[in-house]
Length: 220
Image 1 (cartoon, helix red, strand yellow):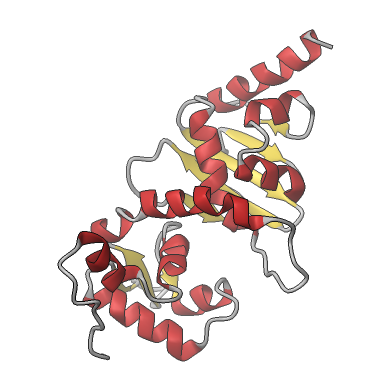
Image 2 (cartoon, one colour):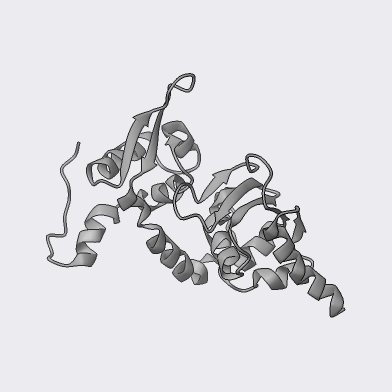
């Protein structure tokens, strides 16, 4: 492993940046908030990172107690990386960075990569702020599907693809609407009332979201 680089400052912010201030580290944390992931999957969902850089960052995160590496039992028999409790504590940091970065997002550039699940954390925040209760919500975008765990105290916060089993609600929307909700420009309830989010499912979460849709028609 490469020697740890440090700002050599007796300051908590400097110490934090010693651990997570290097390029790619926090984006790896973003990916691992979905639960254990293989190296190849991480590399596929972090376009632009070299294999050497990703391997180096993962080793640094293991050394610093942010992530661990383990082997799945057969028939998987693959190595996966996952966050430690200390690594998971970076969720508020990522959320704060995401909120701060909303003003920097602007229009999508031709060179910008996009994965559907990159909307998971801001949309999860919007669902929690809407007060619709705990449950699994499946989200369908033209770029792909993902699901989020609203109100999860531990475990993965989101996952890739459709939800395993029957979700508590399904949301269908376009990326423009998801971007507006993520930026805080459009409230989730307003998006439902405005017909920009289609809600389906029989769970309590779906029913709570459909109440907003019912208000839309009542006010029409």
